[in-house]
Length: 250
Image 1 (cartoon, one colour):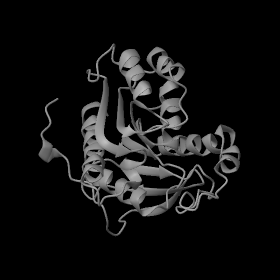
Image 2 (image 1 turned 180 degrees about the horizontal axis):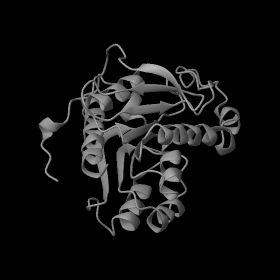
Image 3 (image 1 turned 120 degrees about the vertical axis):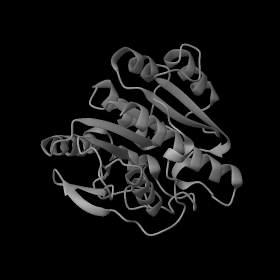
Image 4 (image 1 turned 90 degrees about the vertical axis):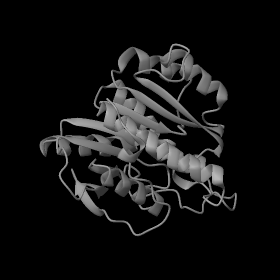
């Protein structure tokens, strides 16, 4: 499938959200719907980081995926209890305590409710785009082959190499990883393992790609400091890579 750079409408760095809050399967979601004709049998599940679906950066990303032709649903699997967006600036937030209350048992049911409801609405093929915390769910959905294509950006909560090996063994979904230079949660050693296991030693194959954004730090694809040219380029590059990957595989 041939795609040109002009096929992708760019990511915005500021603006007014265009989507809306909807309850899907009784789960609060932020939904971006394409303005023109689109394939209603396809949808992208936007799996946010710990800041959740009300962060304007996340909402603008959802809208931008919709602008590129994909109905996109950001799922509140944090049950209305995200980490405050200023939690990590003062150094006093008890993140381990928050994480203990937001494990798989508390959060995964909302994902499943949304998938079930969307299927009842006629959606047949799902892609997922997971950021940090959300990458865990991207992998889990792919393990069960609920999703047809997976995108993760600066992933967290993955066991390396175990989850990579499990992905290769169980999933049929092509995988795109947006990686970066400074990332304690998915460092260069883990990136190399991903290439070895999922790319058979290669960074780019037909069904596996690992984009690498030099100079960027964990979180760049959603919450990066856009005053830094390399971070702005990284955010734009990660979004473009995701859209092209969905256009090719979803």
